Image (cartoon, rainbow, N blue to C red; front, side, top):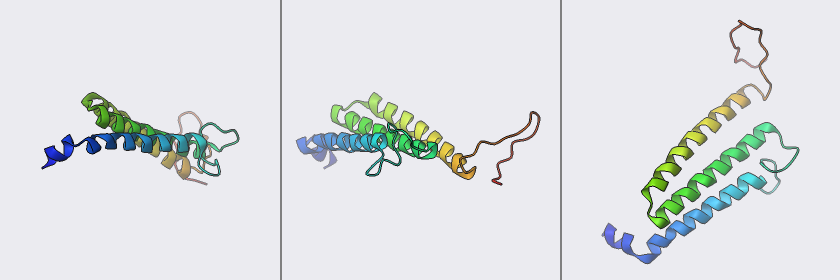
Length: 120
């Protein structure tokens, strides 16, 4: 039954819909949404908001890659999209978590002192 669904033309073309969905997320990450608060390409955006835009952009890039892999039936593109997408989203999420935990302020320390992760 699944092979019949997979061989149907409409099922194959759902990859185009997934690519369009990914392109929408890419545009959302670049433009920052309605108010532009999380934009990658606008000036005057706080760094933590820009990082959230970067994460949205990466999500869109991953979803668009998955849609392209689905449409063209390319396993290597599927593996690359999932690999890079997972790695970069994982890293950007940890950077955002650390940035929010510090309140967006750099940590000052002297040489030889351990890093303090608490917010004063």
